[in-house]
Figure 1 (tube, rainbow, N blue to C red):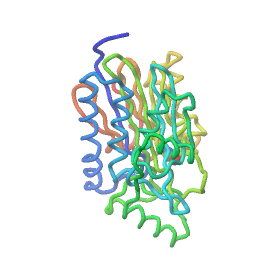
Figure 2: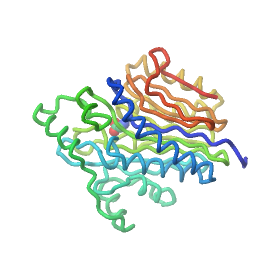
Figure 3: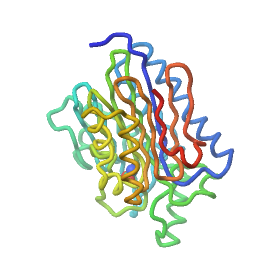
Length: 318
Ligand code: GLY
C-alpha cells in the first residue's frame, strides 16, 4: 500500500435550481467550507478515507441548511425518513439505511453496518439497531422544513421535490431543488471512500426508496469513488455512481468517464449531479441540474462549483 499520498476531498450539499442571490451562495459557502477544512485536516492527520467521510457526513447532517439529518425534508405524510450509505473503496464494501427516523446521524448507523453481516437495513430494522447501539432518539425537524411542508400541503403537493437548502431567502427563490449531502475522500494511504445521506425528495409517497441508500447513488472501488445528488429516480435509471466508477476501474480516465456519462445523462434528460475522486488524485464533478453545491480541497486550496458557467458542467482537476 502507498504511503504519503496527497489526500483529496470533495463534498456536496445537493443539486438543483441555481442559487439566485449572492447572499444565498455565500450562505452555502459558509456551510460547506468549514466542513472541507475540518475533514481535510483529519485526512492530513492520517485518518482513513472512510472515517473522514463519516465525519464529513455527520457535519453536513448536523447543518440545518441541508436536506439530511437535521433539516431533512418531510414526506407526504409529514414525517421525516432518512436514507444514507457508505462505500469503502479499499474493501469494496457497501452499507446503508433506508427510511430511518428519529436518529441524528444516519451515517453513524451505516458506519456500524460496514462490519455487520447484514449491511443494508430498512425502517424498523434501522431504528431497532439505533436502539441496540443506545443512540439517543432525536427529532430532525426544523421550523423551515415544517413551514415548507405546510405550504406544499396547502398547494396539494404540486412541487416535485422540496428545496435543496433550507434558507428563508433561498426558499423564496427556489423551485424544485434536490437535496442530499455527500463526501468523497482519498486518504494518505491512497484509499478511497464515498458517503451520501438524504431526507429524500420531500413530499414523496410512503415507502419510496432513495438512491442515496443504493450503490446507484454512492459507489467506490479502489480506483474511483462517487457520490450523487438530484432526482433519485434519474440516478437509479442511469445507475450513475457505478457507471462512472466502473468506467474508471476498466481503464478510462476519470475526466473521460465523467464526460461520457454526463453526455449520456443529458441525452436522457436527467436531473442530477455527482462528485468523484480517483486513486491518482483527480477531483471531478458533473451536473445536468442547474446548480451543484460542491466544494473541494485539492491539496493546496479550497474551491467550489457554485458559480461554474454554462458549458463547464463537468470539471476535472488532475
Ligand atoms: N437523491 C435523493 C433522492 O432522490 O432521494
